[in-house]
Image 1 (tube, rainbow, N blue to C red):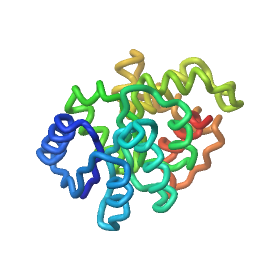
Image 2: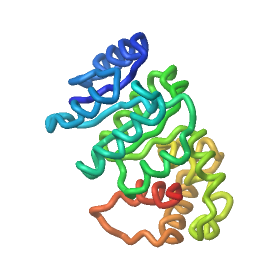
Image 3: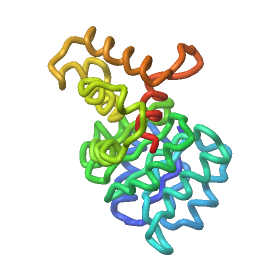
Length: 213
């Protein structure tokens, strides 16, 4: 998989390049500013991107804006966003399309190499991976009808799904069986009115429908 990496901190950028390439990815472009990022995201041969939120020249939201723009041009283009903080407004925009292949991790998560690399792989495979703090922030502000339909346990299950957890991991965390987890997930699908469609990953759609503001 050919990736774009955007990170203005030289040491972190070098570390991420090494980490990604030793994990089997090809970093086709590594840039440190927004104009260069906009240019390399136009490369039709790239398969995904790992982007810092705040980059030169203004250090505000360049990375997220670039992520939103490239997904508008290439729907479903895999993007994993890294940030020091939860940018709740832009997280909403990133999730607004209702498609998968998106991740939002806080930079502290990069210190856990396995989880970070697994997150990149999940996003490239069409999944959704959100840092627990991102999940908590968005859920705390969610006041739409679908939330009211879910039980407290179903909300817990869906929050863990948003973190990219497998059924077995969810079961271990909540101390319930895999069968119980599957039952909760099927109930979530029904309450969120997600139709049975082999062409749609309902797990991803459930997470995005729930977290969209």
